[in-house]
Length: 181
Image 1 (cartoon, rainbow, N blue to C red):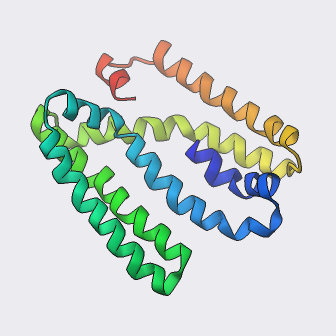
Image 2: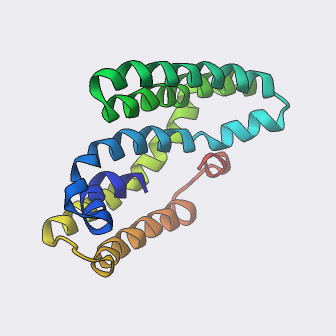
Image 3: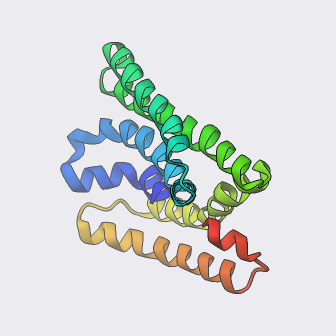
């Protein structure tokens, strides 16, 4: 979904609420990318909770929440809504890329590089063909209704589905990689 929102975000906004809201595209991107990084770590959070590491998860999450509030207030004064979005995005990205993976790998005795590769690079590689099809179709026509938008998104969903099918059935995938996706 992140790839769809980044590449087709302007078209989605225009079809959904109208062209006068196109300036909100930058806010969409600022929020969707770190949220996607965090969602890639959803299994990590569940593993920590399942291992009874609630305290550690709180020690990771609470400073991020405080930083989110502080940065949102500070940056919001100068950059308005974009500053608030940045104030949310920065701590969420830091938690997702730095703190949560590092702590989980330390606890599970998993190499950080291998974990990051499996958690981020594999989904990113699977999203590459999706992004290429999105860019191609976006250059061919611009949707002006929900039906046209659906027609533009359907081939991308099929492309991503084929990539997932290939990855799990044809590629030599170690079982632990499938657990991280």
